[in-house]
Structure formats: structure tokens, C-alpha cells
Length: 152
Length: 126
Image 1 (cartoon, chains in turn brown, red):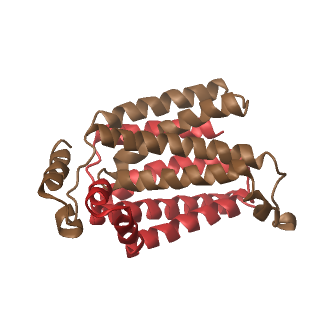
Image 2: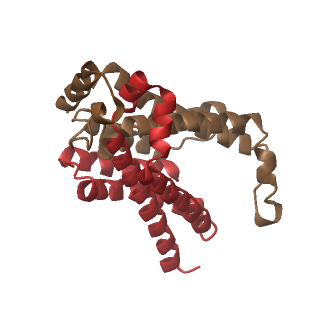
């Protein structure tokens, strides 16, 4: 794992958690959406918090796909579960939501789970196509790609 | 709504979300390291490669189905039941599906990680 790859995983955590918190903050400005007032969903899209949340979640999705391009699904999902921890902390600080002892126990379990997977290999399967075949990447980049696969 | 129907709803969320994750993971592995491709061919080439992948688009479809399954199931029962149950079971289902369909080597460390994270998410989402 290179520093760049750890930064991508960090981006998944930060963008995912902050995007959800922004959406949650934005939806507080509106009442419950029901079939009777579904048009409210169109109004919601003009709320700056919701717009910011959507932009952050687009960045989350891009970094999530990037992580999946060089790491196993069973590595990426637990490794980025720290977003649940960050989301709880952000919700407590910015949305003043209550964090119960049960929540703290959940945060502890997630952190343990992340610790289990983070100390292991990130990739256990061979890529279906080499980057050079599909992308025209330079031999250096291909070597870099193989090197990171080798450390798995 | 009966308990059986609610659990059928939760099962449909888990199944469609897992299918979406597995298909997208497979699509990304087929495309290759997106960071390396972006450096050599640019971001628009990456975008074109991703959206032209039929597996990726099928994965997106399953993710949309998971979202709508969640909405429908939430109308049947409380979010404190549906949210934790679907999120934590999706972690376990992903580990099983990744082992079967993606041939990932899910060793005892990854099983423990999936179980701990699933339990943590269930507690956190309540």
C-alpha cells in the first residue's frame, strides 16, 4: 500500500461521512417527505446543505470506485467503515445528536474490525486486465501497479 | 405488515446492495487502477471507460434497486430495525459473495473484520 492509496481510503471515509452529515443537516430544514408532498424533493435540491452533501457524495463515489480498482471488496468495505465513526462524531458536534453508550460500543467494534483488515493484504485476486493493455500506461506505472499487488 | 414480509424486504435490500457492490468491484478490477489510467490518459478517458462498462452500469442499477427497496421497507417498519439489520447483514453478505463470485481470499482476519464491523454498524445505527 502506498501513501496515495491510504489517502484514497481516507477520502472515502471523509467524503462519505461529511456528505451524509450535510444531507442530514439540509433535510432538517424541511419536514417529512410523504406521497402527499413529494414535490418537496424538488425544493430540497436548492438547499445549499443538500447541494454540498450531493457534491461530497459524488467525490465519495469516485474515491470508492478508485479504491475498488486496486483493492478487494472485502478490504475496502471494512477499511472505510471508519466513516460511521466520523459520521457519529460530526453528528454530535454539528447536529448536536446524542451519542449513547451503545453507539460508543459500536464505534469500538468498528475500529477493531478496521484494525483486523487494515493489517492484512489489500488485494488477493489478480486483476483481469493489466493497465498497459487497457490504458496504455507506461511500463513504470505497470511496474508500480504490479508492485502494489505484490505487497498484498 | 407481517414480520415475514419485513424480513423479505430486508433480504431484498441486502441482496440488491451486495449484487451492486460485487458487480462494481468486478468492473473496476477489469478496468484497472483508475489512478494509473488517469495519470496516463486523463480523467475523461477514465470517465468514458467507467460509464462504458456494462458491469458498472448493471451495478448502478442494482444500487438503485437497493435504494428503492430500502425506501419501501422503511415504509413497513421503523428505521431503527430496517437500518441496522440491512447495513450489518450487507457486510456479511458481501464477504460471502466476494469469496464466491470475486474469488477473493477471505481469511479469518477478514471474517472477523466483517463480523465486528457488522455488529458495530448495527449498534451505531439504532
